[in-house]
Image (cartoon, helix red, strand yellow):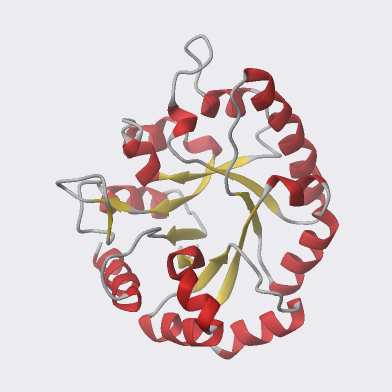
Length: 245
């Protein structure tokens, strides 16, 4: 199976707000296979699919919020199905209590079952706080894995935020491979904890990417939340480095 390389469009959010078609054009020229959405920019699904096709890009899927999983799931399923996106990912969640995380697990299991019945896959995307030993030595990430069904929920492992939290992302990847379906391939500056272009920092992105290919992942998603050079140059540097891996 080919491992497609996509960009989480949040990396270019300002450019997307200015002109989404220009972004698609630039990503196509750079050599990306597709994109992961975080917003649909009030564009109808049919029009979005035409725009993707125009630039030979595929939709990996989208990030979404908890509200869409509880009250807007039918609309989300219709949209993702029409644009050809396979993955729906909860982008962010936090709770100060274990009960809050357990309630999330119920929501994830229910939504994941419904998505699965429609040919889609639910993922959970981490930040750093999921790896804190909050509740009698238990991490929220473990609560999620231990209280959801593996057929209803997989992980989109953000390796930057794992590293930020003091977790070895490569070891975590290997230890939890059965629950991981894709990664956010992101790098951390060698001196500070700033985000930097993939392949220029301290994280073993090459090793993790090779593991993704060996595991037959259909997508690996590049992302850089904060970019300090020209944004289009940044996402091309990251992609070129991954291709050299």
